[in-house]
Amino acid sequence: MKQRLEIPLLGFAAYSGTGKTTLLEKLLPKLTDMGLRVGVLKHAHHNFDVDKPGKDSYRLRKAGASQMLISSRNRFALMTETPDRESEFDYLLSRFDTTQLDIVLVEGCKNICFPKIELHREVVGKPWLYANDSNIIAIAADSRPEGANCPFMDINNLDAIAAFVQQYVDKFNNKPSVTPTSCDALSPAFLSVAEGVEKILARIQPIDDSRTEDVASAHKKVLFNDVISPINVPAYTNSAMDGYAIRGDDIGRDCYQVMAEVKAGYHYAKPLLKGEAVKIMTGAPLPEHADTVVMREESKRNGDIVTFSGAKIRSGRTSVVPEKI
Image (cartoon, rainbow, N blue to C red):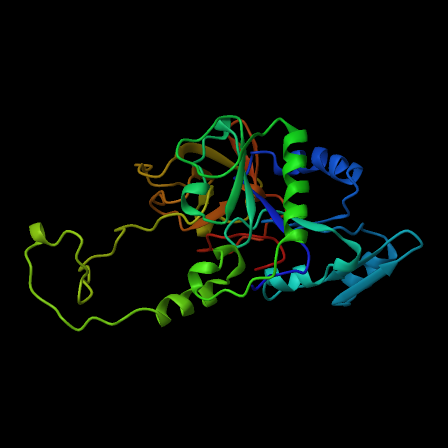
């Protein structure tokens, strides 16, 4: 069975605002008290820097070092610049010294295939993940979901979550070695997307037969040829993320006035003027004259005024991350 690591790997998946970091911060002392040696991988959607301006390591990095290894009696840290592309998940996991760990916990990376606990709070107002992710092996929430066929824990019961992690480690270490005989024997959590697609396609028998049916009788049948839309779908330019829509010819202001908030399925009916911004959600159409979206994490709002201090904004881009454009 293919595994990403020789030790257990367990993620905590949730939407922003659920409190993943806060939960892990309170959970880690309980796990270490149990005797577990824990590694943590955290994925950040924004630019970050663990170094301190003015320190020797910071100065050497800014002078041109693409990798900076700093070491002392108590710890060492390797900082690697990745301006061209984000590091692959498996590569990041390979940086851990698994001989010194019992488990690696992952905060984020909810779209990658590996075992995860879903964290969910009703107040956040986001949909459940488990319904569309077979890699969710347990749920910790403040309300019990209907139809979920996996263990449930109260998100505020840290002892229960810690006990689940301990059981997960014990089960991993005591599991028998099994050689799967078909793709059905492999959990999706241990297959990459490419491996999963390859195994599925290898078992598909092509169908050459075709017939013409009217639409009313086409239920549960598969199209033989693609149906090409004569128009753009959607018929407008929509936002790829939550953020603030502005004009590309109006970049560089100290601040913008927020005129409205536009959710998916709605639109801002007025042309966007210079000095104005519209808070926009993923999937919502861009206002007239707007062609740039600054993601929410790179903004700071005070009342109806929003600023983008530190963000490097390029006209027409819908993904704005400092140092990565």
